Image (cartoon, rainbow, N blue to C red; front, side):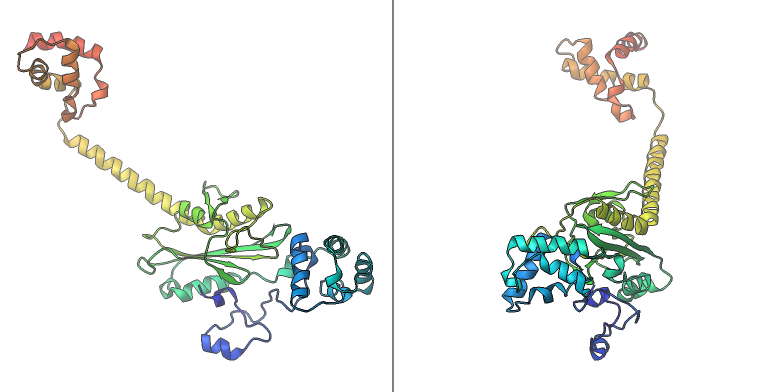
Length: 367
């Protein structure tokens, strides 16, 4: 999935000529997302990320006055709030003069002074029309009377900051893709690895028990990545603080199960019907196999366990005596018979030694 699939509208200031050249037409001109021009949100930072921000400005030779730096953040256009935050760092006129302790104190005061923003600060989710529409655009056959599912955006938190999860699935025709297509996006950009690959995901609200490690593992257990019955699936996450735990920036650092449950709920919504149908096919296939096995057994001549023993008794006797060259014991004969009755459809484990001792005298009288 290209970058544009996670960026539906043309943002203000972007070139409309570029949109026409790439054929990435907006699907919602009223769409709003968080951009670099928006005021920063102090509640989306922890101590480590706040220090990194300050050092990034200083390293870029942009040593802002402390008051000007504070006004970069949402909620500090008010002179009173900006002054209260400014006073906590004393004589530090520029951000380069802030010690780690000053930065920590400034962060704490700013988070106390500013109101915690709701999910609207993140912007809007992509929505059904764009997410499903993009998948159908990639697979034209899916646009013709094929089913689709969309999980309405779930508002949650990730690393104590706001986050949104949405997902969509579109039914494909066999042969539309070489493998089951799965597209993951974070903050309107594509991901090329599963950011939750080592995290166990379940769907707490669904009546079908589905679980797996990572988004891909969950979808595999839900039978949504079956090549014989393919679906194109897209999962989009909007997160204010998507901290990562590896240098490749592919795995999330999570502080609670709330976000994991939100992902599981979104995946459960789009795969519930898919899982039901796949499990029904599996049950039907298993039933057909059992029926075929039963018919195969019924076609064989019905032979009782006693009749099977009598049929192989002479052969077993000759084997255990070495063609009557050696004496044999009843137990040796029992084992020789036991190993031969399976050809008549009898299970060797069903022939116990006590039963064999009871039918052996009868065989001797009749033969």
